[in-house]
Length: 149
Image (cartoon, rainbow, N blue to C red):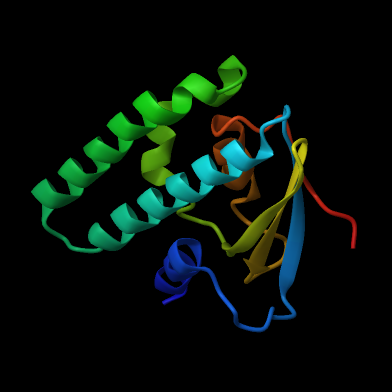
């Protein structure tokens, strides 16, 4: 249920009242925050769409969907990766967020160097935050840190 609602917010936005269990995440960029936010939204929409599709147990459908996701990832995101630690394992996208307990609520650019994401947090401490950081780095972010409350 959370994944479908998350995908709906990414694709269509949300006018719903912000829940109490959210956290802000500061994402530093190199003068291209709008581009990174657009790449991140696209990546999340594709990853979540494949995740929803792959809830089906048909092995050929699951393998084909993940293979297409990996090919898109390598062609469209890896060129923006900074550092070997991020681009070492492009197959990580296949297992992105398996243990995550955060869900993207929204994001906005504050300046060309900074964007702020709002994530819905379902558990503490947050599992899967490293996956969020990894994906943002793959989209071109310089640093990703939890914002001060």
